[in-house]
Length: 382
Image 1 (spheres, one colour):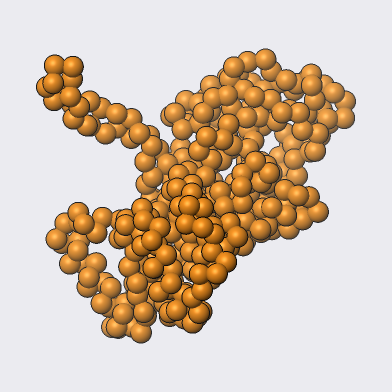
Image 2 (image 1 turned 90 degrees about the vertical axis):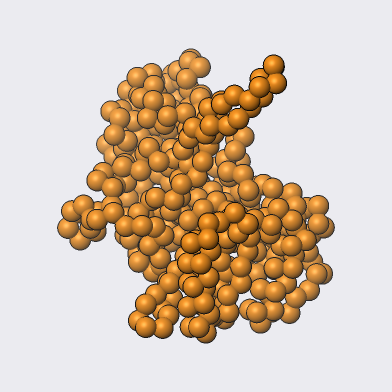
């Protein structure tokens, strides 16, 4: 039987690396010929990145599978269409610990519920439309598309976290479990090495799994529903093309409305390509084209190697020489709300917007939002 993975389980699939080939079977491909293209370092830089993601996403939005038709028939006749235990195990194996149990699935009627610790079944009688699901490499497994899993989670996540999930799905980074060796002290006081498994974000996707245009298309297609309206609101503040979770957190803190704890600044373009002297180009982490203002996030400003510091300095000098007013954010700005307040004020003035503290949420609420955005959007949601 077919298994229809939905909601948070689908989001876990699309935000980890192991399901990326469902979108690009051969990794990076030429969109005209379908031939594999050379691996390119990311971020690619907009607008090329946006265009590649847009073409792939809109191709998917018009696909409807035979299994979706079978689902509609089962809704009507009540025939049992139980999820497959084998496909669930295959999903868990491929997820390599990134897809949590039980897996959230949808079934067409009560007779299709599966009594198993592997799955959490939800009876959903609305039939899957075009673009709602994508076929996985595993037989008998459909996964809610990136856009539809956002729609399914729209009423489960607060708006800022929904905007963060959309940004993650429209980014070039993904999550996976990595091993890290740490020194710990044993009971006898001696130091010993211990390997710990932890979640890490890596930026190696040649193209994001979705784009804001596709998210907006699905949201507006369900604009009469509360979920569609909530999704549409989150899309307005989400960003695309971020290369790390901290870039996403920083951009959202700056652009989310003040009534939810953000600073209400215009939304930046992420990893935007700008021309510099000599016919070269550089990529700026966050950029406001109309104002010629850029923001670079330096995650390891205090621990970077000398060569990296030197290269970053030269790159920033080139950007500034191209009439771009460039600001720098460090890890301090994402750990101190006071430092972030100062940065937001400086950016606001550079963007030609008078800085006013009136309307800002209290410091404690801004800190709470910052802490939330520094975690994964679906963390703790099961």
